[in-house]
Length: 216
Image (tube, rainbow, N blue to C red; front, side):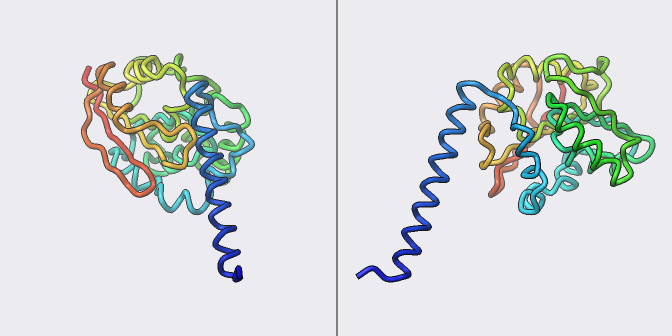
């Protein structure tokens, strides 16, 4: 005889199996053809659960972001990290928020204006291979849940080195739930091949964040 508990347990297992299968399918598609998270899923980027385990100010602090600095947020999405960085760099700092999707930049603009930090952020509709910045312009670059979405990762990392100052830092973070999740080891290999040096790599229950220095 099947009890209510058994029925609920079976339903839960079925749901978990479906979710796992969907995640596997998404990751397989990303491996074959990397692409950005569609803008229709933008609300997920600022879901309260994600804010808890990512903790943007803490990650930015670990990357060394401070008053008066220039910060690049590559693949900024809705501007979650760009806004946090804008608060930390203050009126004398600058944040460059770059995204491939115009709809994401529209959302980022609205949110930055609401928080009163839009005057500290430059938003750019651009890709990772030709950043709209001069050489040696940035103190800290952020790439959060984005590197796995970029087809030519070495080219993107090499372009990041171009705009980073000598001795500047690159923070790369990713989440297990990201369909385009890129393993920390693969990130390190790609980064070191173009001239970055790993400072530390911290694993968490939700993923990891790695910090590199630009050894020019």
